[in-house]
Image 1 (cartoon, helix red, strand yellow):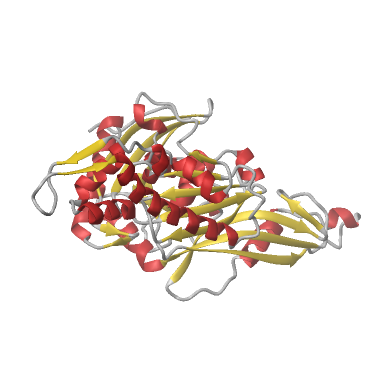
Image 2 (cartoon, rainbow, N blue to C red; image 1 turned 60 degrees about the horizontal axis):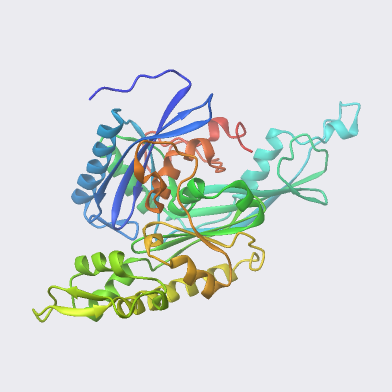
Length: 424
C-alpha cells in the first residue's frame, strides 16, 4: 500500500472510535488554506472484544481494530501512522473547578497598568492551578476545557491576554479517566503499529462534528446514544459545563424486544430498525410483522404498534435519565437549542418527537457537519464520534498541560507544545 504524499498545506487525520457494538475508523484530509475537511475513507468492524469501554478480549479487540483501520486505509489509499482514539464508559468523570493567581507586576515598569497586564505565562499558571485537584491514584485527567476567566470583578472573559488586573481566575471543566482503561487502549493501538496522538471522550468528539458555535453559546445538550452507554455533554456560554455517561443505550431496546418476543438478539435488532418507532402512537396497529422463528420454533406475528410499545417504554427511561443529568447542572432552563441526539440510537424513527414530549425542549438529530466526501454515509449519526475524532486536532478546545508521555504511550502528545496557539 502506497504511503500518501501530499502538499504541506494538506494534513491527514485519523480517528478510531471504539464502541461496544462497532469499531469505526475515519480518515479525513484537512486543507489548511481552504479550510475544508474531506472524508477519504471509513472502515468498521463488529466489536466483541470490548464492553462499556473496557477490553474483555485482547486478541479479538486487536483483530477488530485492525480490520476497521485497514478497511479505511484501502478506501483512502493512505497508510495511517498517527491516530486519535475514543474512550467512554461509566468510569469517565467530569468536574467543574477553578484556580486563581495574583498577577505579579513588573516594578521597573513606568506604568502600573502595563505592569499588571496578563500574559501567556499568567494564563498557563492559572490553568495549572485550576487542574490541581487531588484525584485517586488510578484516575488521570483526560481533558482540560476552559469555560471562562475572571479578572478582578470582571467575569465571562474568553481571552484575558492583555487585560490589566491583580487577580486572574480560570474556570474549567475537567474530564478524568481510569488510567488502566486508557493505558490498555493505547497499548493495543501500539501493538498494531500505530502512534496514539491522544484519547478523547466519545461525547466530546461527537460534539465537535455536530454542534456549532451558536449552539455552544446559547446552550445545548448532546446525547450520543451508543449500544451500551449514552454519553452526555452540556454546552453553555461557549464552554463545556457538564459531561457524564449513562449506563444504558440502544442495546437495551433490542434486549427488551428479544425477551418479549422470545427471539434472538440479531433478529430483534433487525426488526427494531426496520419496523420500530420510538413513538408507539405513530406506528400502525394494522401492519403485522411476521417473525419466522422464535424460541417455540413456531412463526409469530406482532403488530408494528405493539413492537413500538416496547421501544417507547425503554426510550422514555433513557430520556428521563437524560433529563435527570441536565437537572444536576445549573444550566436547566437555559438551553436554548435543547437536545441533540446522535450515535446509533438516533436512527430510531420518531425519536426526536418522543424526546420533545418527555423533556419539553427542542430535539434534533445530530449528524456530522462541514464534511465533503463521495461517500453517502457522511451524514449518518453513527459517524459523529469517529469524524469528530479525526477533526480533534484542529477543532478541539482541549488544553493538555501534562507531560507529553501519558497513559504509557510511546508518543502520546498533547497540545502543550502549542498550548496557546489556536487556543481560542
